[in-house]
Every structure is written in C-alpha cells, then in structure tokens.
Image (cartoon, rainbow, N blue to C red):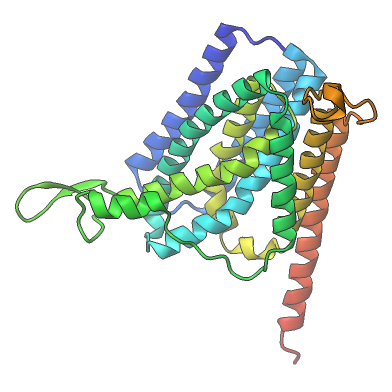
Length: 330
C-alpha cells in the first residue's frame, strides 16, 4: 500500500482541523454536555470513521479498508474500557463535571502526539526486525491471560512517578481556579493550578494503555497510515463517549472478558505471522515455519466484531436480569 505525501498532508490537516474545532468549542463554553449533544458528536465521529473506510476501499482496495476497520474497532473498544479509569481519575482529583471536557480533550491530544511517535518507532522496528512480532504477540497473550485472571472488583488508581515528580517540582497552588491552568498567588507570582497534574494523569495513563492497543493494531496491519488513522478516529469521540456512557459503564460487565479474547486472538495471530516470516537462527534453522497458517483480515474482522457484539449482548442481558431481581415485589 503506497500512500503519497499529499494524502498524508490532507489527512493530517483534516484531523488537526477536527481537533482544533473540538478544542475551540470546549474552550469557549466549559459545560457538562447534554445527552443529545454527546449522541450527535459520537454518531458524527462514527459516521466519519466509516466514511473514511469507504474512501480507503475505493482508493486502496478492500484489504486496506478491512485492516483499517479491524484496527479502528479494536482501538475503539479498548478506549471504552479505558473510560473506567478516566472516571476514577476524575473522581480522585475532584474535577467538576463542567470542566471535565477540557481535561479529557487536552489529555487525549497529549496521548495522540505520543502515540504518533510510538507508531513511527513501531513501524520502523517491524520493517527491520520481523522478530518484533514475537514480542508483541507474547505481550498480548500475556495481557489476555492477566485480564481473565484479574479480580473484577473496582479498579484502583495510583499516581505514577511522573505525577509525583510534577507535584514535587512544579510551582502550584493548592486549589483549582475554574478551568484555568495558571493563576497568580497573593504576591502576584504566576503559578500553575492542580489542573496540570490532572492533564498529566490523563495523558500518561492513556499512553500506558497504548502498550496494549498499539501491539494489537500492529497485529492487524503493518501500514503506518492505517494504524495512525484508525487510532485517531477511535479516540476522536472519546470525550463525548465518556459523558454519553456515564453510569452505563458498570453495565458492561463482560467488556474486559471480550477484550481479553480479542487481544489473545491478535496475539496468536502475531506469533503465527512471526513464524511464517521467521529468520531467527535458533528457530527452525532460521527458515520460515511452513505449517504456520495465515489468518486473513476478513477472519480477524469477523472474530473481533463477533466477540465484541456477543460481549455487549451478554452484558445487557446480565444488566437487565440484575435490575429485575432488585425490583421489589408488590
């Protein structure tokens, strides 16, 4: 798949334009968005993502469109799972609902910039060292096993080293000042507000999530353009999705299990791909393993979509049954 410079340029300009519009709207009037507003934004971003898949199908063929869709669906599902931690962070730092939009948007922009660098590094590594697939695949299988062995109690959030360093080094006030990032103290000196710590928490936490999501999408395609666009489109509506789901997150009881199946499947796919392209001298004499089957993108997309659909249906059924059992009988 060959992507020309002009196509990269147009894509980057268009996506940056969307982010700037989003940022301008949040900065102009900080507020807690309504259900109708969130639904419109989330629907709009999903439609844009699907239209872009159609464009890829016309421009580069069905294989490229399928790889993009599989990557976007996987990234989007992992992003929904990440919202659990975002809810905890907002509660932990006591951010008012009307200011949470700005915190989420800035944090997402930071994570997009860092993920762009990770994608470039990952693509360069894969193009030179096919054995990287062994590492990515093994990590995803390990992550899937951890998900199934994880206690489903309420997850806890602990501050990482960067946040603790920021608290110790940066000149900050002790209280928030609306949604402002800086203010002046009693002596007139410019000081950062604790909001900077929240930005760092959201950004760094999302980068940590990239350790799962980027290897997963590299298991579906090795094209940097498809990886980048799928990742960006998956995160574009994350802010509105946070408010749209709200208290519904606890109803997605089987989401983590479904994601565990998806990550495990992609991990196995990566290992099989690494075996079919093997050049490690201590494995099969440095020759590719002929029996390793190739899993097509059609099969991958069907497994991912089917697993997530079953997960959603099972979660809704469980939530409905739980609600019916808690209703008092007259």
